[in-house]
Image (cartoon, helix red, strand yellow):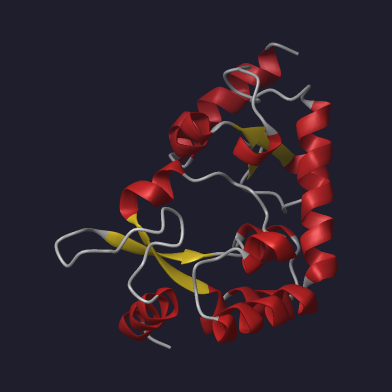
Length: 179
């Protein structure tokens, strides 16, 4: 599926309504394609079949750009899927995806929770306390595999900064020195 087809499918799945705020997406508004079951799951639990499911059309929804930037990093449950403001057919397709990769979702959830707890519920960079649903799992060293030992939880603000390699290296080096 090409980019345009993905955007069309996401908009169609959402019926033109942002799945995060439940407000219509107007023609002049910027919006993005949201993976309701996050892509982080297949990035951290590397199984080709999980990637296929997470990238499937059933998991694509339209969201306002601003809503996407404000959302939590919460991992969906059957209840959150059932509470989506989409057709029952779309919910059923998404529930099927969820059930097929449930073990991988739980592996990811466990990894994230253990890293967060090890960091004493704080961002690895700024040290501010963060709730688990607000924590983003990132690699400490991008040259190494995604494993529990190479993982850290960051707040949203630090996670955005860490997407810039030079900033991330500086912060990781600073963290290593303070140990």
